[in-house]
Length: 124
Image (cartoon, rainbow, N blue to C red; front, side):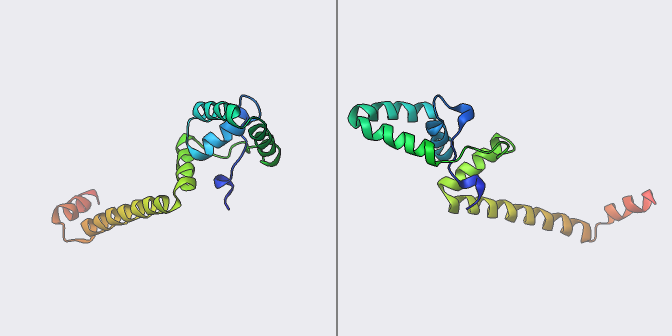
């Protein structure tokens, strides 16, 4: 498993131990909604959710510094975690597009283009 697809505690954006902010980064759900859900869950099953929260905070590693180079990369890896097959299809689609564009460029330069040949000759 890649380091970018694991769950980490996000102490940088945390309110207490970083569990809710880590879950928010992992799932893509806004942290405020996870925190509100945790508080609402506190009314339903009080001791169990606190124990679960503390266990997660104890067992999960802290998020390494510099894990992502920017917000776009963080968003990409979040998509990989949520739906890996869609992410690979998007990457495959981008490579197909690049391949098609390179084939168009190659066709343009290798075809009999007299205007281009004249411009090249004039540069010599």
